[in-house]
Image (cartoon, rainbow, N blue to C red):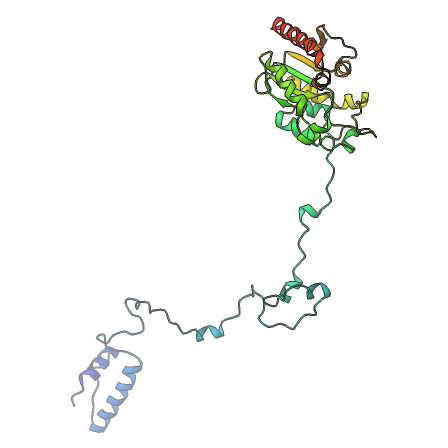
Length: 318
């Protein structure tokens, strides 16, 4: 009996094709049914396509707007407040505030933030030492003067007043202490006395823009009960002396011009007009304070003689 082509292929694949004999028509039909079932479940013809392992992956499908598949995904950690939370009891302080846009009760468990820096106690800065002042540049020196606490004047002053002028000056012009107007302006020997001082310096071809640096022996004002300036004590002069020494070192000035008899005595211990004195190796000439010249204009001639002496002393030192 002839077999179908598909049956013959299957029997050949199993190695029993030539030996298979069919004796009855019903047996042949039964065999073919068995072959059909087993062929579909076991061995497929080589010409049949293999669907389980496609040669190339299919092209990606277009994104779908359907998001129902996401419902079974594990929930992500929440980074936003819950939409619905039990109402919180409002404190008296909160009643005055506008109602929040959303419930923020989830934030209650967050650790409290550290207080801002401005709310923390401010630790007082230790006074600068003599060695620290001796190593300062101009910016550091002026900053140190403004925050200085080296003597008792720091407790009552309105503001400390650093020097001003040419930082490579030839002359260091020295007053005793800031006046009330100097505290207000933040400038050593300012106001009307400062304007007169500028005129005096111009008469010898100097200015605070070129050649002259103006400062004081002590950098803070101390007022008496009558509102006037108190002269510095020996301890206050000693506390401020490192600032003056640093100003001299930074400017490398070749002469000091002291304003007022008290200033020269505080610097040198003794002083006299009309003479070239010495602070170490530095020539010093004493003259009138501009505030005194405003009260006694008749002394301006003597002050001019002092300026000429200072110019000669400085020229002889070069």
